[in-house]
Each structure stands twice: as structure tokens, then as C-alpha cells.
Amino acid sequence: MSDGQRQARFDHPPLTPSLCFTTGALKGFLRLSRSSIDDNISQNLNALSTPSKPAFDPTTTSTPYPIAPTRHLPAQTCRAFTEQILLPSWQSRSDVLNYCAAVATSDDPDDPDSIIRLVEGMVDKERVVDERLDPYSGRFFPRESRTEVLTRVVRNERMVENIVRERTWRIVKEKCGEFGALGEDWRGVLNAWRVRKGECEAAVIHGN
Image 1 (cartoon, rainbow, N blue to C red):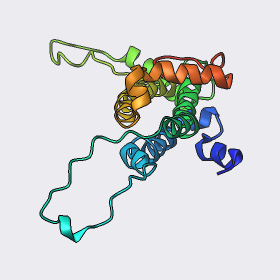
Image 2: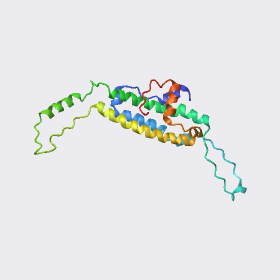
Image 3: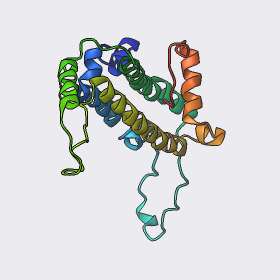
Image 4: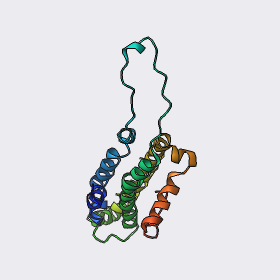
């Protein structure tokens, strides 16, 4: 796979407010990225292993084969998979979540529901409330703005992302003795990779 093909594989959609506010598209990208890499991490790593098996010897059928020790992938293979496949996919998702978090905290004059919320607020102020007749009549639940919805979505997706990465990295350390022996945390590995790739300054890191 060429560098261009590899990069295209992990490219996120164009970063626009429309992507963020269309939460179905946002969640769809994150779900697809996770399913292709993290959800199948064991299979992806097993595919890199080519264990050798002894040729069948009919004279040894009465002798059980010894249990093979746990096989670790070669350090070079693990490092290549991590830096060329796993970390780029994580970075791509972080880029999207960080961008959408910034969108959620920015002014949103184009919110199509802003007029509706304004009218609903005015109507609520004019209501005559008698809580003696209905103790719940004074309650008013304003419609969420799309920036509020986006803030909630980003927060939830970041929580999911942390859980997914913890699980993925645990499996990577089990398969790759190099990482297991060093006891490296996925955050440290990701940040070190960002520094090497010159991306650390551009990344806004909130646990991702």
C-alpha cells in the first residue's frame, strides 16, 4: 500500500460545521472507523502472524503435541501496524471530535431553530400559571440548541473513544511483547507519535 493510499484510508470527511451538526453522519464516521480497526483488532493482529507448524508425522499420533507458548508478534511488525494503521485511525477520529467540540462552543447564528426557541420562550413568559391546580404547570423545558446537542454528542463519543482505545491497547500489548514489556500507555504512545509526525501542536487533547 502506498503512502497516498494509506493516508486516504484514514482520511476523515471534510471538517465543516455541517458534518458536526448532522450528528448521524458524525456518529456514522466514528462507528465505521472503529468497526474497521478497533472492533476487529484481534483479527487484524492475528492476520500479521504466520506461525509455523511442524509437518504431520503419523508415527506421533499417540503423542500429544506440546502446548505452544504464547506467540508475540515481531517488534517491527507491531510498530509498523501501530504507526501506519492504528494511530492514524485514532488521530483521524480525534481531529473530527476536536473540531466539532470547537464548533459546539462557537456562535451559531445560522441555527434554524433559534427563532422557534425565541417564540417558545416568549409564549412561556406570557403563560398564566396556577400551581395550586397543577403543580407541574410552571415547568418549562426549552428546546435544546443544536450546539447543546452537539456538545452532548461529542462528550458521549469521547467517553466511547476512551473505552474503545483502552480495550484495543490492552489487546495490542498482549499480542506485542514489545509494548507489554514497556508498559506503555496508549495516551503516551499516541502523543509521542504526534510529536514525531509534527501534529502535537495542532492537536487539542482532551483525553483523546
